[in-house]
Amino acid sequence: MTATIQLAPEAEKRIDSLVERTGRSKAFFLGEIIKRGLEDIEDYYLAADLLEGVREDT
Image 1 (cartoon, rainbow, N blue to C red):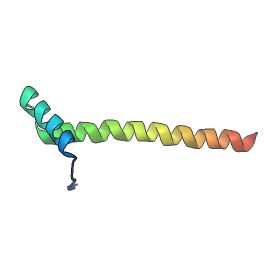
Image 2: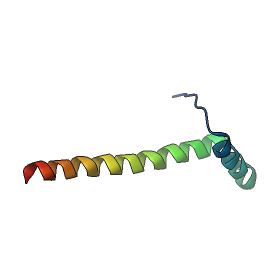
Image 3: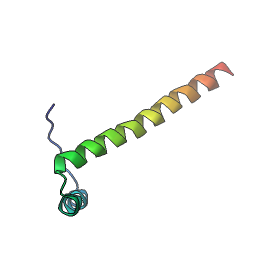
């Protein structure tokens, strides 16, 4: 899948700094950011759904 995103200048600078310091690609870091962000979002929404279900049952 290909996607186009617009980053805040500060975020782009931080990613560019990582690219320069580590030799890894920008695509690598963007993939990591998405993967880790998705994990956090899934955790949040699954917990919120579970909590809502518990509240409805009481």
